[in-house]
Amino acid sequence: MKKSILLIASTLLCSYSMGQQVQGGKVNTESNKLVNKLDTNKKQEGWTVRGTNTLLLNQAAFSNWIAGGINSVALTARADYEFNLKKGKNLWENRILMAYGLRSEEGNPSTKVEDVIDLTSKYGYQLGQSNWYSAAALNLKTQFAKGYDYGNPSQSYISNFLSPGYVTLGFGLDYIPNDNFQLSIHPLTSRFTIIADKAVFDPNQDGILTEAYGAKPTESLVYQLGAYVGGRYKVKLMENILLDNRFGIFTNYLKKPQNMVLAYSAILDLKVNRFISTQITADLFYDDNQIGKLQLKETLGVGLTYKFGKY
Image: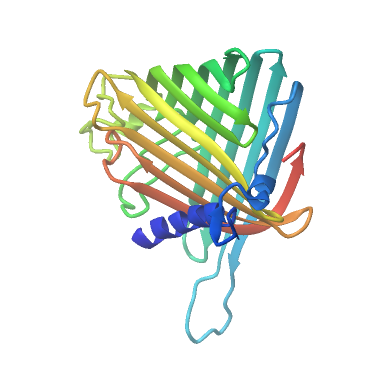
């Protein structure tokens, strides 16, 4: 895990250092190289529609290979769409992020490598002529299918569609200078945890019910009131290489505010040509109401990509 975190940190450091030039023996952080990577134009009027469809493949095959190995194939489909409208001082932004992937190994049942549904809608009203907006944001995050602890094959599934499901409604301020950077500060945020499938309270199928995702076995909905700080930063590291970062921090005013929910995700897109690219993704997540440990997920794949709109 330490190596993975160091790799992510190194990637972010490169995105910063590549934007610097030395002029007259001094580092010029406002160099043209950095300016070229960033979209310094303000939000444009009208609709901005863009999307990415990706089909990634990982495959390994062995035949009479003396060192050994297991034939395997992993396939992941990902869709990422944005529909944004700027009209005068009004800004309405919508994002749909969905992904699902399976891995199949010879002699073993298929396992999931990706499963996410992440829907966001945000409205902002520009304050004066600044880059600040009074904002309201709504987010839904869940998964498509049942999830298992593959390290404990005797267990039944431990998660499912809307089990958990997280609905977040926040009010506050957004700082949006351009299409590549956003910072959200929402001191009044409601977070609802939904448990629609009661089976997740009994993963061992022994009739002994346990708490799950901060909910008691008698609860289908848990309410939290707190503060949310999040952001997004997209940077073009070099030609055909784009890094998209997102982070979010939530703290609950009502109970144990020190136990914050932390989330970070990064997508490194290395474009080979118009339809072929390599994607590396990294996700870090911590929620004391889940397992109380830092969760890490990394994926790497080569596959087909179709983009539309301006990136």
